[in-house]
Length: 462
Ligand code: ADQ
Figure 1: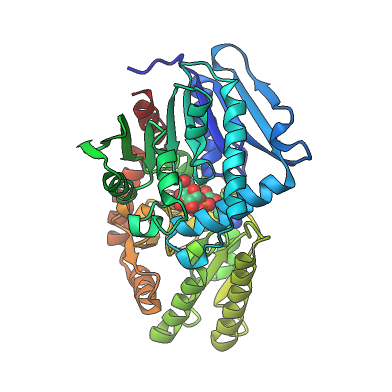
Figure 2: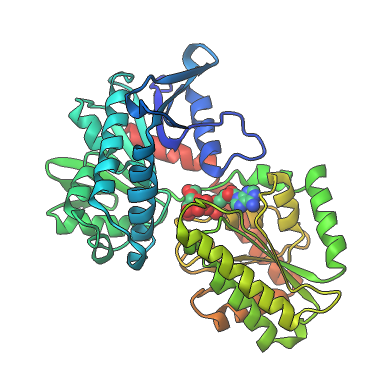
């Protein structure tokens, strides 16, 4: 049984915002909702760099009062912390490793030390703020060693972890220098949550190789402890997103897009610029569509919205350049005075405008080379007009593919395969589009973000 009074403590790299304004991402909204339901503490980095860093004061910001009061508590980092922990180990080692891109790992033992130091400092500071019954829920790859450090600070709480990005098979994971240490650190958690069944199985394989014993579908006994290892596919608030797509702001964005399209069909992609998202491959897939199926010439436009992320890292700057190059080339070769085949913008959009743009698009093109889940896939479907819905083309390597089987599934490594999938989507008749949409939407409403959060917290309560 759930005990509503057990306080929830959320740990994530960035804290807040609590108000679900236009710009908040999926993680922030899910965490804010969890905290609103039962009150609690949200702890992490302030976003600020200062000389005192993690040794400085804890910034506190209390909202509400009584049993549902929410405290936001944050710590600064020093510039060195940030460069070693965040840019170094988290984003140049763990991000590529967990996305199966071992070729891009840029390992420096100093960064590993910085990562562990920041985890330790944050965990010891948090330990002094929690009571023994608090449920602690740690988010994502920045904090793999967090529970181990909390245990060293004598915390005996239930501690859960949720990984938002993929978890690869042992052969890939073991590329990490001192992978054994990292696995042992993870075993200090009580619940290890992953996006897909495949990810959870990869973790279990690693634990079995380390002497663990699987005692049920979702539990492993290892080193004298029982861990829950389970898939909790993250989700969106599908109902609200569907409503958002019919608001006035969304309609304005939709009408604006349709005016520009002038009867042409739109294909849309929305991603942070990141090598995991397969953007150059996607652009080449669209080019192949124009080559292999010339009847689309002048009839289809591809809109890619790709705000930059972590712009300081070279890899991201390179992708952006490559995208500008391919789109310039495609537009020059195929375009006409009244038709621009690829429109590529790096500007962020309010969520309502995004919903309208999804709805204005006959095809949602979501083709990551590897992705934990991919919420854009879910948002695209939720935003569709139930009477005349568009079609989702989805990479087999997105976590979402495990649930969204009625999408047109494609292999993003093959431009021919992507072109064929787009063509299938463009040619699909209305009744099949409606059938696929209805099945997907039913799944999204049943497995929404509220269900996700409750299922996870139930596991964490033990
Ligand atoms: P991301 O890699 O960021 O998340 P994704 O799941 O697609 O990927 O979420 C992106 C979010 O940002 C979506 O809600 C999208 O609408 C929004 N967004 C993107 N571009 C935008 C723009 N130009 N304007 C406005 N909003 C924009 C990580 C993992 C994923 C996992 C999520 C959640 O990499 O695999 O699904 O966390 O766990």
